[in-house]
Length: 629
Image 1 (cartoon, rainbow, N blue to C red):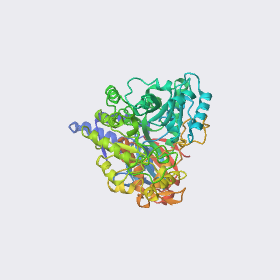
Image 2 (image 1 turned 90 degrees about the vertical axis):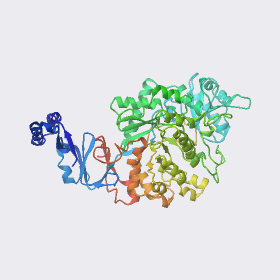
Image 3 (image 1 turned 120 degrees about the vertical axis):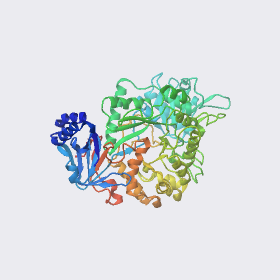
Image 4 (image 1 turned 60 degrees about the vertical axis):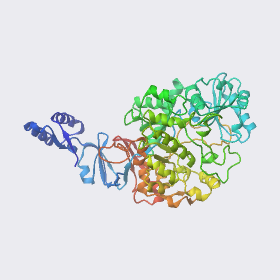
């Protein structure tokens, strides 16, 4: 049994606190104090930890999956002062309960660590272009044909535009959308600055918007053969415009965002997520800070700072703010920094790959190899490694930040990021610093070995291969062929070479890239998150079975993993994404008491029924945050 060295003063304090929890065995404590007084040379007395106060919660009569190194299965656990206190059989743990202790009878069910979600979605004021929805005129326009898209732009401006105000909208990433010019937008909106976003590093602006860019923008303003701006902005120019020029909401609009964020986080917590994070720009951080100061955060938050992202002044900025890695507490903490995404999505042909697609759609805007946002970030004549976020990886490392939360789907994109890490590692410590990438699709073993050497953390999103209506798999099969699709997300191979991948889930109501029509008003709350009750369990089931239910087929059966490994992906391995594995992710004495009660036996339920296990309770820091009944 673990023991705690307690001074005589500590014992007196503890004895005064006993009344708060109900009567303890006072004789044990006073006897220990008496012994300490009689033999003062002892200095301290070893008193079993359990006798100092009753447990706050005891959970018993089921399977407690600790997810420790040995995947120990216990029968019961006690929680006190926000941490796991002790594990054992039900009889032993129930002895630690007092009159005010909360008792949770598992009734043969399962207790698992709280689900840890790196690169979680659904943040207010986050991820351009959807981050500017709060200003009220966000729409996404379909651009199969140029004239049709321009007509819908004009309709949008007439409905929501007042002279001088910014107009924002997104366009589907089609070949036609990339032909829009500054002059076309000037015609559509002569009295408003306009930003038309193509992805989160690329946009097209009109003359009024272009004139708002400050002089220190060093790259990303594209020009025609005569040296005149075309309206296309990428990389650093796009970053300066979206982070520093676009207006923030104030007053009631801002407060509405704070309340929406709280609702989203409550929705997420009810699915068993106890910690969530992602890259965040300043507005999102301010919103979360306000919830934290009010004591209204429903779950733990990890922030990946976007200061080096799309920033031509990354080094001066980091010099000003210093190294904030780890600043905060167990509820809200700065955990990393990030740079820009490297590629796009398989659905629009933008996944950056080492070999060409065998087929693609005619409307796709990119080459047979997809595209790299890093390579294409600067205009002709500038070095993309010097005038883009490739350089900012090393700058972040110089000032003490690890880099994570980067969207990369294709294998060429992974190789490009590894090259940037190699460059940074020549001068600064990189290995073991939890550098991480998200949205895994192509992660071949040769790149896996390079990533394993750095002890990188890879997030894998099951929705691409196993969830939804099967459109991702259909697109992959067409572009690459079923054999290549079956080898994507090769978890079995990566785990076998020593990697510890993490499970990432989406859970947002984001619109598809190609909209059927112009959307001016969304009937749902703007940016609201619609999470399924068991989204993490669905992801676990997907990687255990590799089955796509919508298509009725198994995708890559030789890449199946065990249910123990899949649970690690959602918990302790996921906690590595923000370097929390020492305090979160498993049920062990001394770790923070975050856990989820499942109404059934996780270890014996048929693999295809894992997602049907109900979530009965969510406990964070030893407090019951959600109870199904």
